[in-house]
Length: 407
Image (cartoon, rainbow, N blue to C red):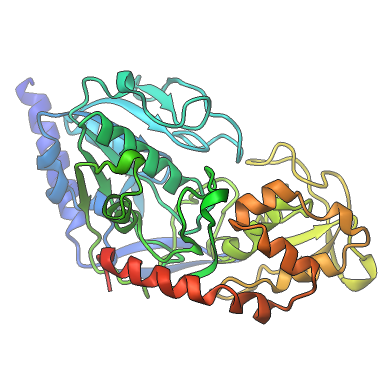
């Protein structure tokens, strides 16, 4: 490397280390209706460059990343890939999960292979015909770095991407490094547990809907419980967070996906995400995704709130497009500490033609069990439904405890 380039890389590295080592980091966070400045002492693993940069020097690196894969420097941030390239790390390729590397694809929309126009790096899709890196795609890599912001909900597909990447790394003897980030729903465990016979990309293991773990902790569980294919274990390194506990209230400065725009959407997502398995609109096609619900086939006399979904960023074809949806506005909901069935029960009870409500296969995939649909149809209350989850939740918490990194 020329002396001038080496000098520039050294200066940038020192700047990033200095920024990462500040005692507190000032961030601007978005709430549903206001912006507030707070001092956030949590340090994400990507900012701990001193902990992982030496492990990448001289290595050929592949990175699993999306728009949340950033290093924070005060109020601004730089993408991890851009930063590492500037520092002289030999990044060879990028693996893109759902929504894509730069985050422009709709939920469920296939992501295509291609080339990143900003870096010239090849982009390999993990959300299309191929969801698991092949031997050929990992060939020549010394290590894979996984850095994605999760929201701690089973059917949010990034934990499935993590599992498949770990499986491929284990099969091909390629080490994997997870740069940990906080789980904004990491302060509780709740919801129905996935039944083994209904596992899919929306839930690959028998875990609750909200599992209360960071990506790093979950990666350790995948290894430790033998959940990777053929019981393989990946050569795993977790770069840990600093100043984080599971009770920490973390505000995401970057939306983790197009339809989770703020803290309110993220806290409501575990409960309202179940509407994805119904014909009810949960705010897609508005600026209040996962902060409201409604449908044209619900009883208009039962509600004083209505809205009309239209195509927008992240939702080209929203449910009930162009129709007046009657339902509830939940945009002022405070931070949740549980999964509630109150809203989906409310929507079902006020659906005029019950045959229009469930998309049975899709609902089972999201719920993890066909029992939940049956319970709603039979008229069980929220408390009665939640009581049936408790044994499974207690069993999972015992397993989970073995892999927790943070209090």
